[in-house]
Length: 244
Image (cartoon, rainbow, N blue to C red; front, side, top):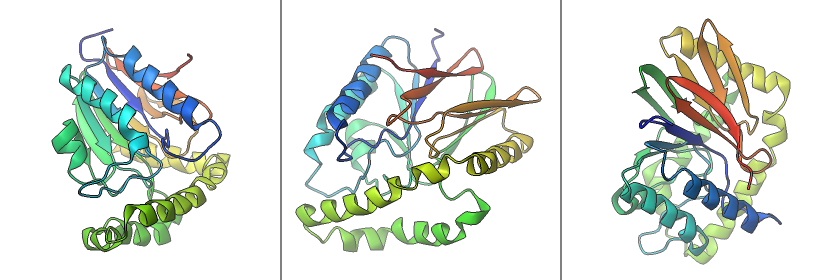
């Protein structure tokens, strides 16, 4: 591994009430531990948590173990970027000020790595058919709306949010359809034509890599079914599966 190796992970949906929730969390933690000695950049490309809303004096206890691992990586010199997804959009100051993560509320980030122009984006709201969602997205990410919602006690606010998150997860099979995946490929191609060398998405939960004229689109999949992640090394992106 090169010293500036970058890892990309998304759609772990930690905290989701699923039968394998504890096993998935353990797998994510094992992955973070496994990359300790060869990672320079870690990009969390949205929906790492199934739902995140930041109360001033309350952090969900079932997130503690993973947050500890992220803090440990940060203290060891890893530059961590967190791109907000459609489940973890209500990020406040905790991740940036306490953990030391660079947070990108828009869910997209453009960066030059290893001589390549890399565009990283969670992927929600990019499709032409997402017009209605884009309106909802503006409302959900509005700081005033979030402050009003947080007036609910966490014991009420979090269960309500979990119910909406579960409804959103039910759309995973739709986003994994070939027609939807093809639409994301087209959006990625447009970004590549606009000057990016590598485009990386999450959101669809379907891992894939495509190349056009030596430019690459990579969807890094999920940690619900596929347990896949991306690795950028020597200017090349690779899609890998993490096995315990």
